[in-house]
Amino acid sequence: MALLLMSALLISISYFTFRFESILLIGQFVALFALYLLLAFQKKDFSLKEIITFGILFRFLLLILTPNLSEDVYRFLWDGKLWWEGIDAYAFLPSEIAKKNILNPELFAQLNSPNYFSIYPPLNQLIFATGGIFEDTTLGIITIRLFIILAEIGTLILLPKVLLKNGKDSKLSLFYAFNPLVILELSGNLHFEAFVIFFLLWTIYEFEKRRTNKSAIAIGLAISFKLVPLILLASFFKKLDLKQYIKFILLACLVAVISFLPFIFSDALEGISTSTSLYFMNFEFNASLYYLIREIGFVVKGYNIIGTAGPLMGILAFAGMVIFNILASSKMKLPERMLWTYMIYFLFATTVHPWYVLPILLLGILCDYKFPVFWTLTVFFTYWGYTQTAYQEHLAIVAVEYISLTVFIVFEVVKRIKNNRQLYA
Image 1 (cartoon, rainbow, N blue to C red):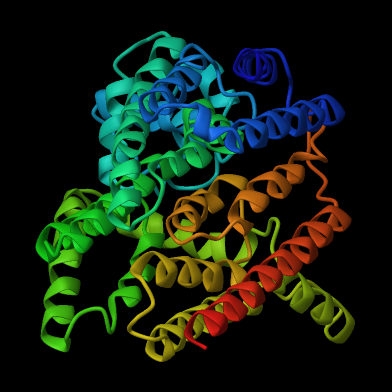
Image 2: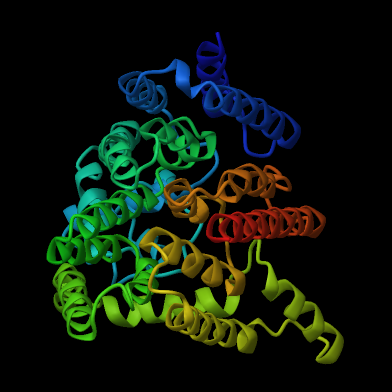
């Protein structure tokens, strides 16, 4: 019954609910999450095969969905169609292309960033181009979704193996397989964290098998889909001797660099550098520490200091991640080092969209932390504030999200420290 109700709610929230219907949207998500927790605590009643099967079926329920919480897919298709027109998708702003009436104006009207250069890496663009083959937008969306679901299937199959390798119950994979935020944001709204998660899991799997070269290739591929996993290279410090560590980093970076070689034959670098600079100096959403710094800036300077605070937060995040991985015990397992490295990154980030936190969920499952599960609930509340034409962020919601998350983290860390002391007393 719970599985049927969850399926019905997934269909309702995805196909029949608009993003601006905040009460209905949040209400359905809370109900979905309650069913998810109910099923998670009954995981002993499921076989591993059933967990994987139902996890895949939940994702295929959204196969023909036009994403209702994000417009990013329209940029994916826009870029993909430009390649088929023989136009470098990195070289021109969509607003420039629109003036020439090369692509469907209806597709342009759906874009949420018409005045920003594309920043999506070449491997992503290859998938976009595959979806861009079709004139029909729905067929293009389904094509991209099939790639996302394929990555998710890989994660669902590999996760139990990694759990068993770490001496954990393979059925803990249910916490990922049935998680509503994972299903809605990846298979539903087509965010490419699906590939990051799969390749990070493969990285950990190969590393624990002592196949460091394959592990380096895997994290190189994760970086190829999204640059953020680059920060996780610091997590391997002390897990390898210095010579192995340098070799690992070089191989991972080589894989990433090879994937970015198409940039050499396009005008990508200038556009990406421009858009990346704008990202760090203009974009702000669901931040934690940065919002406190911003408020101080308003008091002291009288204006939004993101232009200086954004890059500074990036520098502080980098320093924090390096220092943590230098000081962390070599006995700390790789998934936990990755988890806290990610958390330091998010602490200083100016933008934290709900789908950004999904790799945290995977890592939390692997190292017995429950706060990432909690975060996948509270971060969804940031959707509150959308209207049919705009978005107004509610800082009270953000404050509750991060205060409650901090309390949960402190509780879990203190509990773990006490348990370790009793274990070795």
